[in-house]
Image (cartoon, rainbow, N blue to C red; front, side):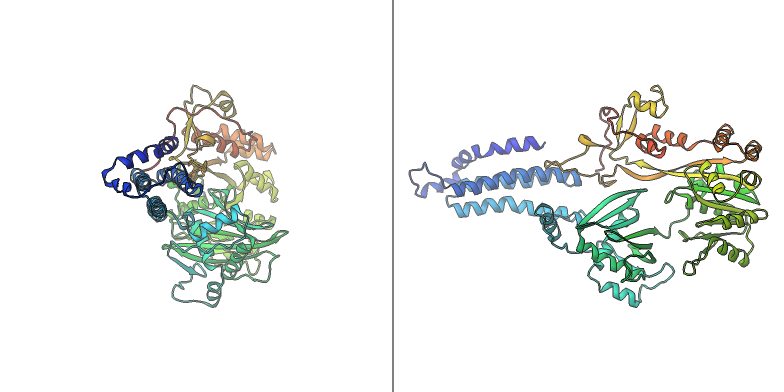
Length: 594
């Protein structure tokens, strides 16, 4: 539509004088004395030409912007276009140039200003235009200036707490007062609100040579969020360090702290870690929203596979996954299932990620640098549970202690590993032998999280043979696959700038889906372990015994258009060269919400 706008508008000046001269109300122009003509003021002509061309571009921009923000596109197009047309007609009718030009400017700018005020009320402050922050950022970007950006006003109701268990909404402890007095306080709160809005689990504030960069981890993937002058980025660090009770003068050694914030009634715990590098001091914030109910095995879709494992009274169950990959959530679900059968359950965790009803949760004493083995001894001195979840860094001594306790207790260990066999391999690395594993290991549950395609902007396409070969599928089984939009499929304005999908903020993915691999020990696998056979052979035996591999579950999600082939191949660690998968299917774009 942009080209049609511009063609129609560019021909408008040719008709304006004729329309003006034919109007009876404008016959007063004949009363004004005129010269012989055939002369033109080049400066006046240039001013009118620039105004007209700018109006043409602004009409196209309003059309694209209103469409992207789902505003009243037809109404705003009519107002902005009609205002410009009226201004041109009046300009040709009024014989005094200063007055005519002033009327033209007012007719063009007044509807535009009304639209900007209206659209700014429908977007977050950081996306508003013609504000002081927006104008300064334009100067910094295009003129390479280094103007400080004013802190945005908060669009959320925010209350700062110093710890998750402290109700200090009416109090103002000294370090909170000190943080409020720092110049970067408002910007720091706005960053927390933005991270919470976008459901980011991690915020990275990283120094660079001339700029500071902020990246957000959303659904397990780091994304660039913002970049601003280094001096402005430095203002954020002391605010977060003061809130986390870190030393402000220490900028090289690692430090850790925590505080809590309540954003629009949602309680969010924030763990902060700072560490110096060659470029400066780097800060990492880990956000965890409290108040959400822990997921059950039913909610995870894991009851059928895991319930039999949790009936054991003794032995070891391993839960493995990647960092920020759902393994702690699965551990909590297992504890709730065990507690449901009236068994006493406890946990030892490096950080308590979430409070679970009827489960006594303990943390390692970080101030005393307590080891996992010391923490377990403290736990068993305190009580005699039926089952214990251990979710903290383990060494050989702690694993040996767990192995001994597994004689009379059901011990659940949370480890890092890509699949079930990797979890078993991790136990071997920590000092256990295959023969000892065969004696007390009951099973391994591996979890992976795959990003789900945004249903509002995903693209359906017909896969070519090469793609199908990579995922071991046949053309008869697959009609369409799905992927995020790319290249020419992205929605753009007339300036060529990408207009991101409002649902996923242009990421192409929204949320994650868990898939599982459950290895249940049987006599055949135990015998293979006692014989010292390779873990690859044990994996094949587990698959023959009914274990569904992670890659099979991942491909099922791709086939059902829940995730993309690229996401599956990334999980399988395949090295994939960028390539066009196929031409999009006809009418494959999902409709944008209205």
